[in-house]
Length: 484
Image 1 (tube, rainbow, N blue to C red):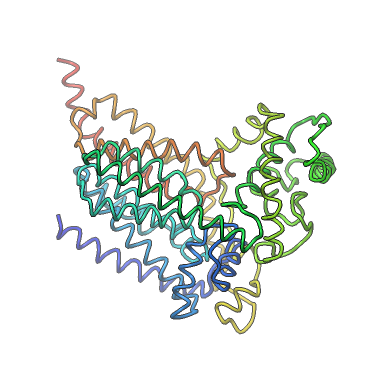
Image 2: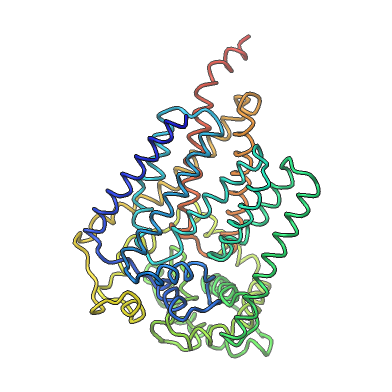
C-alpha cells in the first residue's frame, strides 16, 4: 500500500510541475478580482483586521518577505494545495478498499482538475482555503479511528488556521466539536479540547474586534457580515412585485430613502438586463452603483482604505436594516432570496472563473506596486478561449450532488452499513453532516458561486464513487439474500 501511494506521490509531483510550467507559459500573470486587491493592500499595510479575514494576506506577506514574484506566490499556493490533497487522498485509502479505477478517478479529480489549476492562479484565498479544509476534514476522519492527542492538537491548529482565512470556517468548530464528542477520547480530553477551541477562537475574535476598532474605527468582529445581511435583504426586497410604503424606524430613514428610488428605477429595466438579475450575485454589496454604498460611483472600493472605513462605520446599522427588512417580509425573503440561493447551491454560477482579470488588461496600482510590475498592463498567450470549459461546471456540480445522493440512498438500500468498513461509515457520516451544515450556512450567508463549491465537488465526487463502488460490489449478494 505504501509503495503504491509513493507512486501516486511521484505522479502528483510530476503532473503538478508539468501543469504549472505549461499553464504559466500561457498565463504569465496571475488572475485578479476585486478581492485580490484588498488582500494585497492588507499585506502591504500589514494589518491584522479588514473586511475579510487576513489569514491569506499574511501568507502573501510571508512570501513577500522573501520575494515579490507573482509566479512564486502562485506556485506556493498551488503546491500547498497538492500537499493537502495528497493527505486527503491517502486518508481515503485508509477508510476502505478502493478499486484501482476509483483511485485513478479520484486522483484526476484532485490533481488534474482545471478549476483548481485556474483558481491557483488567482490572488485570492480560495485554493488556500480548499487545501486547509481538505486537511481539516481528513483529520476528522482519522480522529474517529486514530484517536491520538497529537492528531487532536494538530487538528485544533488547522481549525484555527482555517478560521483566519475564510468566514465559511465559522461552521467548522461546530462540526469539529460534534465529531470529537463521539471520538474514543476520555471525557477529560473532550472537555479540555472544547475549552481550548473555544478560548482560542474566542481570543481571536476579541483580538480581531479590538483591531477593527483601531483600524476602522468601529468595534465589531466583521464589518462584512453587516453589509452581507443588508445586501441579501435588499436583493429580496428589490425582487418583490409590489413594495408597499414602509414607515421605517428613524435610524433607517436615510438609507431607506436611497434604496427605494433606486429599486423603483429598476422596475423599468427588463429582468435580463437588470444588474441584480439572475444568477444571484453580491451586486448590492460591492457594485459602485449600489444604493448601499456610502460613496456611490466610487471606483476601486476594495482597495480604498477610506472607503472601507466608511463601509465599516455603517456596518452595524446595515446589519439592523437588513434584519428589519427581513422581519417585515419574511415570506418574500424566503421566496426571492433563500429559495433561489437554495437552487443556486446546486447549480452555482461560474462567476470569475469564466473570465481572466475581470475582462481587463490592466491591474490596480496596489498589484503593480506589490509585484513590481513595470506597468499596469497584463496579458495572456492563450486568448482565454479555453475558459469556456467552466461553463460546464455548474451542470457538473449538479451531477455530483445527484451522484452522491443516489449513491447514499443505494448504499442504505443494500444494507451498506451492515458490511461496510467502520472507518468508512464514520467518514460518510462526517462528510454528510458537513454537507448539510454547509448547505444551510451557505444559503443563509451569501449568494453561492462556483469557487465556493469546489471543495464540496471534490468531497461529493470522492464519496459518491466510494458509495457506488460498495453498491456495485455488494448488490449481487444482496439480491441473492433477498431471493432466499
